[in-house]
Image (tube, rainbow, N blue to C red):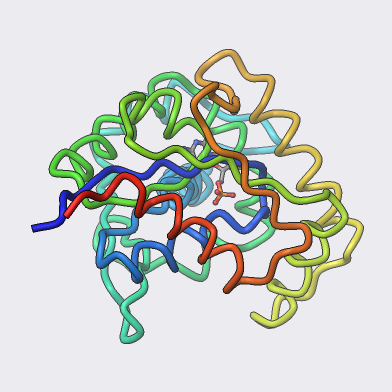
Length: 229
Ligand code: DC
C-alpha cells in the first residue's frame, strides 16, 4: 500500500492554489480541503448577523458566537467540495467580491483562527490530504511531507480572478478585483497571527507561464518522491 502523505499548499490570493490542490487531490485520490472557504464561511456568518459594518467587525460578538458556527464540506456531482454553513450550501455566496472584501480581516482574528485550525488538523489527521491556504505549511501541518508555495505574477492573478468571477455571472470591475487582491495579500502577509510566509522547506511553484496540466504534472512529480510504495 502506498503511504498516504500530507500535502500543504500555500500562496498568494488568486494564484491558482485551489485549482492545483483540487487537481492533485483527484490525481492521488486524496481528500482536498480548501481552508480559505472555511474563513469565508465564518465571514459570511458575521456579515449575515450584521456584525460587519463600514469595514468594522464586532469582534466580541463573533468570538462569542463561534460555537454556533458549523462548517462542513459536501461533494457536488463533479466530486468537488462545496461549503456548508450550518447545513446550508453557501458555495456561491462565499465566492462573492463582498465576502472577499471582508475575509482577510476576519481571518486575522486569533480566536477565529484557533477555531478553524483545530478543525483543519482533525480533517488531516490520517494523512492522504491536500490542504490549501496561507498557514498550512507553517501552522496547521508544520510536519507535512510536502509543502508547496504557489505564486504567479500579480497581473496574471488579477486577470484570472476577474475572468473567473465574470464567468460565474458576477458583475465586477477589473480594477476592484485588482485592488482586492492587493489588499488581501497585504493583510494576509502582515497580520500578527499566522501571517502568510514561505517556509524554508517549501518548494516554490511559479505558474505564471504554466497551464493547469503543467502545474499538476510538476506537483505530481514532487509528491511521488515522498509517496513510497
Ligand atoms: O484562499 P482564499 O482566497 O479563499 O482565502 C480567503 C481568505 O482567507 C484569504 O484572504 C486569507 C484567509 N486565509 C487564511 O488566513 N488562512 C488560510 N489557511 C486560508 C485562508
